[in-house]
Image (cartoon, rainbow, N blue to C red):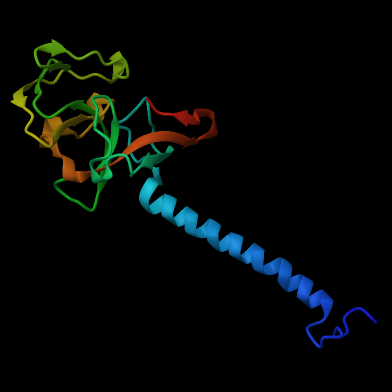
Length: 190
């Protein structure tokens, strides 16, 4: 029997059947991969682009990072001092910012000549180089339940909790975890 001619059972030619047989699993695998990617991006990790200089030197303008959206969702993970968090700006919820957590619920925060004082003790901040510090002072405030005091690492160019106060937990939607661009900076964030 010639190739490409209907088989004896009267079915599709063997070449077409083998093409369909090979294509169906490929399409199934592609659809499953796309579905998995959508689930990961919607619920677990999201790529974002950093805009601005307020998080220098850790993050610079146009860096590309992944944020973990699952860790804080449903109260699964706790927000810790030092976390880099992404949140909706309370004054304009269509904008999102990235800042570092320096004050937790119940803390008393004061800024004296640029030094952050937490519960009466200076906060050790090795991520803020001397050239990025400023000399602003802010009066002492007590952080209320479900609120966090957030500051940029580049203190002299950051719009943060010193200006607009603590941020409520409901506005925080992710933790910055990984830089993937530029390639020379690829790696986990501290």
